[in-house]
Image (tube, rainbow, N blue to C red):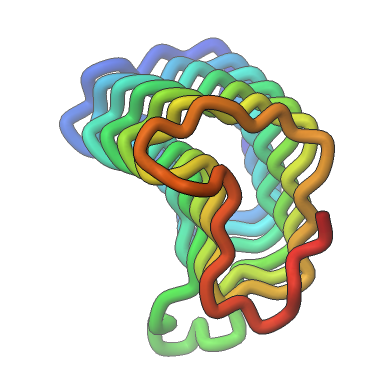
Length: 178
């Protein structure tokens, strides 16, 4: 288990924080700003992001391919040039075919003014998105594609300048629970 707290990784030329192929890492009250990605968490399990400031990154604020049990709680995720939170399941690395994007909790965050989606889920299962403030994310506030067992509840979803709907679901295998 790893615990990283009160660090400032502003201006990193690559990822402000990166954890891959590990389990049980907590990031608490860090600053992940003005880097390529704020947090890169691919192939991790049981990772917690709590009360971090994730702002102004060149790509997404939080990005994870084939991660499981990520908890994103009470963070400020603002003004990233990609998505605020981006969780997906791409072609697996050899020997890691078993890794799945699943069982995430995105709760009690401020996810605002990102250039992509506020939250993007692609081929992700069993995820809860609750009690967040989502506003002004350029493409839309939430996108869920090829997902199943996604619960979206009690979010304050406002101000979507360039989209028709604030919550978008395309090619979803099972309906979203709202």
